[in-house]
Length: 177
Image (tube, rainbow, N blue to C red; front, top):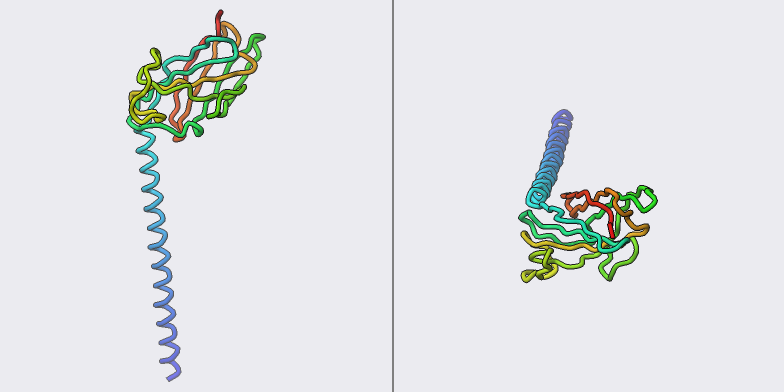
């Protein structure tokens, strides 16, 4: 009689242990599937995003404008999450690498802001669809204020990166009066 009770207890323990293990196994499979789906969505977003720097210009020392075209299939916004990095030389040939923060309220020293979004940045033809969003085919101008100023005739590099890591870079010359 005692062996039957012990056998029943062992069988119950085996069944409960097996159910607990299978529940943990299925839970981990669900988490893995969700993670893979998120990775796939992020990869799809990255593949549909593409930007190109059209031009970097300087109207005066200490300021610059970067014209960018959205040549991808995804509309872009959230400009506060964009990264602008400049590598440049000043007037006395000191080398600087600066990450510039976004300022939506205006333009302070060593910051950048969106000057405007255009159908054509060269002629500053304003956008008409979804104002404030950089749609595919549209162009954006970013205004930058730097201290110290970029040196005249120097060779420099501008890098712009979107929040999902897609970036573009352009080599440009320093301001020449």
